[in-house]
Image (cartoon, rainbow, N blue to C red; front, side, top):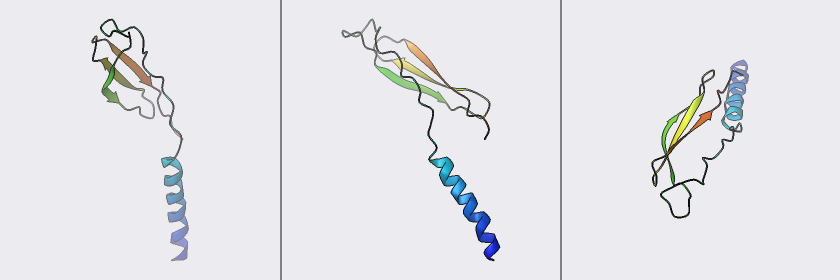
Length: 81
């Protein structure tokens, strides 16, 4: 029974390590350029979020609640380990 514990502890350690792996930092949508806001700054709301997969990029679509402009941010594919 002692032999079964070692693979289980290795699997649990791997799950914990992957859970705390750093995520890729994404760029923020541009702040300036809103034609409807007095200060010229957009008021971005996240409208759509399609997560990235191993081989496929994801994306986040933001919408400015002031002027209606949208901004799409690409999320890099995660790759295989």
